[in-house]
Amino acid sequence: MLGRAYFYAEMDSNSIMALQYAIKYDSLLAEPHFFLGLLNVYADDVQNAELEFRKAIELDDRDIVNSCG
Image (cartoon, rainbow, N blue to C red; front, top):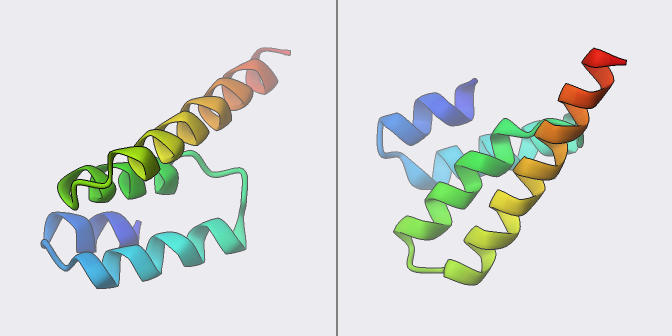
């Protein structure tokens, strides 16, 4: 949540630190990967953006499957 707030406040370095902390705390969260992907897009780092988006999709899909089963 804090990473998202920093993202919208355009405080990119704080956002990155908070998002990475969230992933370290719970590696199965999809949202931090999504926002890291957006930050990478804005930084013109398309390769890492794609990796983060793919990870977000993978984790989001896993969460949907687990909640249905």
